[in-house]
Image (cartoon, rainbow, N blue to C red):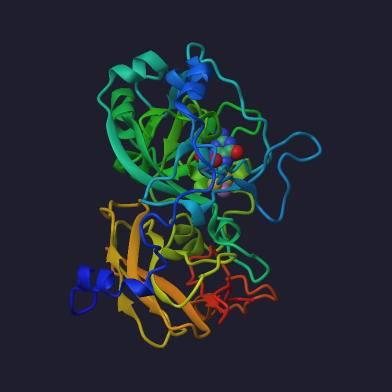
Length: 414
Ligand SMILES: Nc1nc2c(c(=O)[nH]1)N[C@H]1C(S)=C(S)[C@@H](COP(=O)(O)O)O[C@H]1N2
Ligand SMILES: [Mo]
């Protein structure tokens, strides 16, 4: 918070500004069925066995605006997470974004049949069953994933459209370094090629230094087995790297002596070595999820601006919010622990005066890197913005939301 801590009671005292109604007046019109009726209906085995959300909660993933899923062949492409509806820093597994870069049927893998092979430039090629992996020392960490295709453009309406290709989960698995040490990496090795088990393979190459640093061979997501859409039964987590490196349905790791071009790298790798070296790490990025495009503020008064910040460079150090089109910036509060390469939730107290305005957020990570504006990014890449105002490179730029005097919220690029 800027200089002075706000006084919470102050907000409550100014209660007229809040949209609350006196107790008693806000009773729901629909009455609960009487207990006898509920009793007669009984409790289903399913309700007892595996929980469902309330039927009143209808938040959904949605295909990216640019491509339908499933397509005419039944293939699934990129599907956005409903960031506008989420609270906290963890994306519920059922709402985690999904990206299958060449289109895919989600494979149905029997974990008893699944194997992970580590081979190539190693002293002892190894094959692990899922049971083998679960016997080994594990770690649990929160990490975000973001697709390189997560880019806002002027025609997008909601934060689900502009930023929905990122999600954050708590992942559990075995450090990749442990498996590689067990296999014994040979002298001269410098890259690993990672391959998935489904028809498109999802292969990508990562530097050995990263593989030995903080990568996870993950089988757990948010306290249970990884969901099929996220790579059941096993995926590689490469914290902070672009989504394409987070190989799902992980089945093969080959230790090699040089960079290997895979099918997936096509279109992702730049011939400019400087760009290529930086391209796989996600820059510091943040976005306001409330109020955001498509929502409406019912009246002037107090609102808590809320949003998410994340960086491939480490933990989020600070988030600033501007409510006057980027002229003045004030520190937001970090409302969740800022773990390295994980979504961090921020909050910011705000009183809307009912006038048209523009709100935006920008973050700084632990390396001191500041999230750029679109203009700064265009200057850095020495490339103009296109007609949709898409940022060049991977888009980690600041996104403004414009609030009209009727309270409706719109994409500030439009
Ligand atoms: N095997 C496999 N791994 C894959 C992909 C894929 O299609 N197949 N898609 C990649 C892409 S492009 C992204 S952005 C992330 C998305 O992970 P998610 O679907 O769990 O959100 O997985 C990556 N790993
Ligand atoms: Mo992706």
